[in-house]
Length: 255
Image (tube, rainbow, N blue to C red; front, side, top):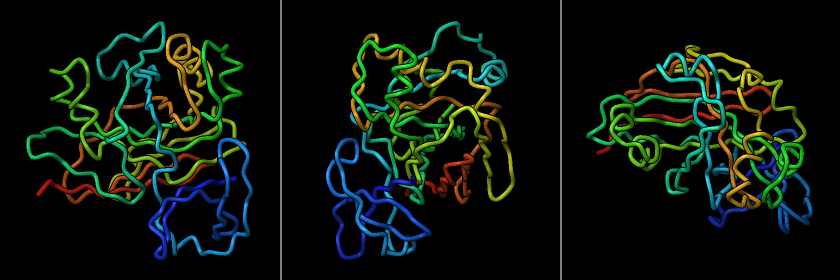
């Protein structure tokens, strides 16, 4: 099932919904608990897609693909390298990525994202996998020059608009059987299987849960493969993951 968070022209209040044959039906209740699906009657083209979750926590794993770690000149980690991002950096599908005027080398990183559906604290990898509600797509925009001089990644990875996420949450799919394709201005620049992940989603979430409680709606970004490309104003960047969909955003310079 594909689950969206959306607005309509008649109501700017965010709602959850589900998609059937390019029609949207509202979901009533708690999408991570007890809910009821209404009939899918609204054309998908008539709604504005929002980031499919507004998490309390965005937790990420770095260097989770061997080739990506090597290409950046880093050691391959022996345990998951965990860091956090602020929810303020998230933008919706089709929103614009804004390049700050001081930025010099901004790059994309297409990533598979796990959306948590159950509270996790000190769980095993198997329990962690069972806690995943579904999957979405993230684009981890990074300013490399800032990142080199900022060990916390506060500016390099967490500037406003640097975390596009969407277009929806897909459920009932196998995370290691997907292919991630990144297109820059329509040309494919990356293509890699999610099965190349060094640490599985269950292993990453289990490791996080030893010290940090994960709650429904929180998201865990699972890293990227291959060496990213630089972005400039006017570009369109797309991340497609098989079984989920396409996350598309334009790049503009800050006024």
